[in-house]
Length: 494
Image (cartoon, rainbow, N blue to C red; front, top):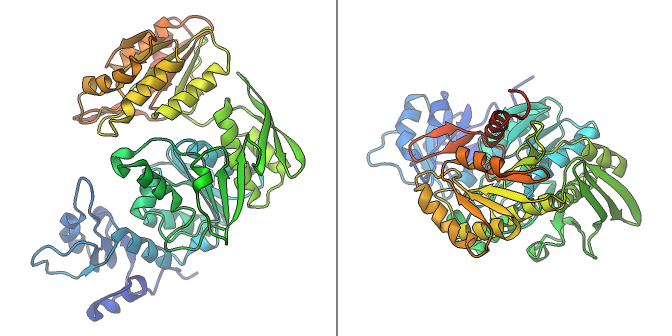
């Protein structure tokens, strides 16, 4: 079988090419100079920490046919240089052409929103696999290719990596890709030109304002999934009817829509919710049907996630029996209200919550389990939106019985300074609290404080197995740290 990517020239891939380069054969595309092969086009992006042009000479030395960039060539650069208007958009269209547009033949679901993207992606994929589809998942925790788990590099990788994933899945007979689509990816053009079958909106709350500057810019980026540039609108849109931003999303008349929620007016509506230590039970109301839903996940926020995933599955023609079986068999997502059990008489959960709204959600899930007390450990990330820190402090203090304020990826900032920002909000309430910048000691303090019937929430890092400090990144997994401390306290066996 001939390679479907063979026989292409530079003029086939780029919008405007100097005549001298037009007929040059292209063997591949690359944005990392370390992976350049002879005949590749090298895309040099401007970046926050490095200018891709500094790697152009290395790329040429490794055989690149030409450099493509939205920036001008360095003075006296002797090799072929093609300047384009927008580097990432150009790469996206080139990658789509190079790999023969696999996105147009696959069912691609994009999930965007502040909270719930990962869980919705996992749940949607579970229903598709229950229907015997061969699938891929791209997201924050991991990538999956037909069941094979691979490490996640970015929540949403560069367009070139996405088209490689699409092509690989298609080659092995795959049919569906479910992917998280971050606001960064939308704003930067990583998903530019991709044809989405289904676009899902979960919710919008304050996050990533270090990148987007304002909530308006943040929301504008999210909306690009529903009225995309460089691609047709999605065949289906799935929107959280209860979220005020969801009701503001404009969609194309060419897109069919499903909205979900608890409130009247939703196409797919939840009722009669029961949540406990064994998970969720509720009823879905849809087109006159009453569908009983069961899941090992807990809390109202996961009802929303299940509704979103159910709607996404409906857009592919799946029946409710298949959807319910898939969701019932989907375990809780790693780092999302994930239990750490060493036989202790209180519950310990790890959650990725790193915004004020996410903190409220996870504490609400804990409250729904009727604990004696809720003890919350949290910190705020360094080199990120400072304004959300007091909001997180207030969110933790408002609904917890005891709070331990600590570090969470301080990066280049002073951990104490970060904690002081959060402390402003925490002290708006009279909630007892402890300040401990050493995260391991903070977790230990919370676990020693816990009594039978309590729930201890370790918030912020979730599935992350590291801590990013000023001068290095160290191994640090809240789940392992908590488990080791519980063993030291005499619970379970090490």
